[in-house]
Image (cartoon, rainbow, N blue to C red; front, side):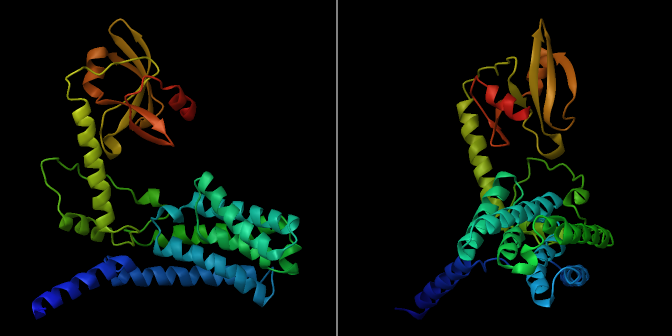
Length: 331
């Protein structure tokens, strides 16, 4: 085999190995951002350890701090991440603590109780849209924490757990306010971006530049973003082919319509009544949500790009004539 071909195959093997191990992308954060994340975590953990030692001895407090340390990583290293937000943090830990307490009190075998506590906590966090990985550690800690922890019962939820969570969120809020590119909760960091024109073709370099511009750890690679964009384009093309027969969009009462916008320009309206040449509607998603208004059929038809329905809390394009299920989800 020629040396050039051997090198090419070796490079291909190493590339695939890097992708398999998740080493295909490098960090996009600056050195300043990395140091700030570590400094915030130091402050958070110092306070967490002090609070924990007011309730437990040193060994038990270290196990409890382990769960809080994982939360600290999320809120200081990934302050804009979905799993780091206050709802995920509070609901994830508290619901998991409830599960851990119930499992410990009703199941005599600690190994089975611990396993069920973690598994059921994950399920509950999924169903409540509050997935927070350290929550599983909180459930496990209560089951395996020993008599000192078990004596607290449901008191454990608000002291020391809730006290710790409130302190960590407060520190994260105040600490991240010191740096203009970091905010916690993430909603405070949302900015009005310049509208992008469809005439520009996006490249891999554009996605890389957009991620780097955040200067905060983004838990998604440019390859994953591009894959999502490609799937979105494929979905748009499929719908364009389906609607290429030239038929006008049918407007019906109690049906939902989207203007096919993006970000703050996107909204979904429900037609509540059609009278003569006027349409009464309610904005059910996007900008001006909850607003009631009326307009002419001509103007509404010019605004509406396609009919939509609500599926698993996400609006999707729909060609169905029945929107009762979507109406129930909204109510």
